[in-house]
Image (cartoon, rainbow, N blue to C red; front, side, top):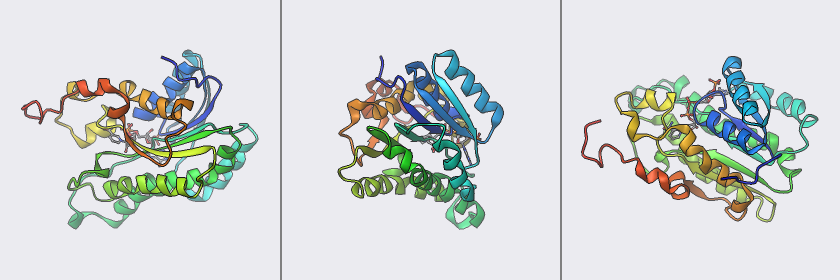
Length: 255
Ligand SMILES: NC(=O)c1ccc[n+]([C@@H]2O[C@H](COP(=O)([O-])OP(=O)(O)OC[C@H]3O[C@@H](n4cnc5c(N)ncnc54)[C@H](OP(=O)(O)O)[C@@H]3O)[C@@H](O)[C@H]2O)c1
């Protein structure tokens, strides 16, 4: 299936691993121009090679999203290299260790808010002039189950993710008639390094690989989703095949 994203210019953060890498590769397969951002050069090179092998074009951007003072420099470096941005996918994220609020250190708490909430909002803000130059553009914030569920021990991560649907709605509310849109997508559980860290005992067969979930992002980037604006969505509602992955709790199995 194609999503009509050939030649579109799309920036994906967290593209050096996991879900972001899978979304970037799927965009490469569509023939898009993919800008990939992450800290690890070598891992970015792996993603770049994958995109190019699939027929897309790629610009790798090694960048630490916690360096907020450098966001302006990043924009200046990009603004003459790319004509506009048709899409911005915020996949970068991090999970400090899960622990009760009682024990969380302030530096870990702040880091979770910074990488999962401040960074996607501030990167959207700095890239807005490029998004405005596109005929229509789609910004996707990646949320998680904590948006709807009070899961214990996720402290700053869960708080940050729960705020993302509000952020998307606010961005959209402030741009009601503009051709760019802002939505939040909950991928559900995805078999990545982050997932393994969070659920070390859970068997992979219950959890889809990133490549299975990536098409949900492509749907939201495509013109077919133009009228979805300021919404909070779940990948399982966009991709019925995700229903085949049954949580072990539901299947009556031990995790
Ligand atoms: N996996 C799941 O089950 C699941 C469930 C719900 C939501 N999510 C969300 O999905 C997104 C992708 O997660 P994932 O599972 O693919 O995680 P992952 O495999 O751990 O990948 C995280 C990505 O974020 C990047 N990143 C982290 N800190 C960064 C920083 N300071 N600056 C720039 N990039 C940074 C990492 O790149 P570098 O290390 O190269 O910087 C990496 O590419 C996250 O937002 C996560 O919260 C995941």
